[in-house]
Amino acid sequence: MDRPDLIAKAGDKINRIERAQIRAIRRTLEPGAIDQTMRFCQRNIGARWIQLCTQNLTEFHHADRLPVLDPSKSFVCVSNHRSFFDLYVITSYMVARGMPHRIVFPVRANFFYDNPLGFAVNGLMSFFAMYPPIYRERKRVPLNIASLDEMVFMLKRGGAFVGIHPEGTRKTDDDPYTFLPAQSGIGRIIHRAGVQVIPVFINGLINDLKQQVKSNFDGTGRRINVVFGEPLDFGELIKQKPSPRAYKAIAERSMEVIGALGQEEKAIRASQ
Image (cartoon, rainbow, N blue to C red; front, side, top):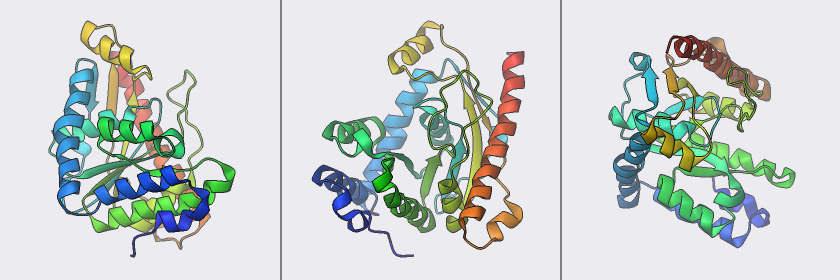
C-alpha cells in the first residue's frame, strides 16, 4: 500500500500553517532517528508523567486479557470517550508493561493543526501522538478519508499503536454507561488494516487537567477504573466486502463490546 499524501489530497482546502504542521509531524513518523527519538520520549517522559499524575487514583482491571504486544506488529485500541485524557492513561499503562510502539491518536484539526500553539502542545504534551488531523467542517470532511488511510498505512507497516474513540467525540452528559453512535471511520480502519483490536472501557477522569492532577495527590479525586477486554473477534464482518455498511457494523460491534466492559466497570465501582 502506497502512503497517502494528505497534503496533495487536501490541495487548497488547508492553509499554509496546516500544511507545514502536517509535513513536520509526518516526517517524525518516517523510520529513522527522529521516529526513535519520539518513541523514547513517549515512553520515558510522556507516559511517566501521566502515570505519576494519576497513579493514586487509577486501577487497571483484567490486564490478563491483553495480547502480547509484538513490536513488529501494530494494534488498534478502541475505547469510550469521556475526557480529553482517556487514551493517555490507557497507553501509559501499556507502556509500563513494555509496549515499544509509536503511539498515535487522530485529533480534531482545529487548534492542533491550524494554530502554532497547537503544534507546540502536540509536541510537548504527547511528542506528536496527536496525528493525523480529522476535519469537522463540512467542506473538508472528504479529507478525512486520506487521514483514515494514513492510519491504515501506519498499521500495515507495523510498529504502530493507534488509539481511537469509535464515538468520534466526547460524550458530555452524566451517564458514562451509554454512548454516542459509533462512527464508521473506525470500521474502515479495522477492516482495511487487518490488525488486532483491543477494547477498553475507562471511567473517572475529568477534563480539568489542573484539578485532575491536584486530586491525585491530595486524595480528593474520583477513582479511575480501566477495564481491558479480549482482542475483538469480528467474525464474518471482517470478511465482508469493503462498504459503508460493513464499516458501520464493525464500528457498532466495537461499541457493543466497550459497553459490556462498561457494565463490568459498573459492578467493580459498586464494590469499591
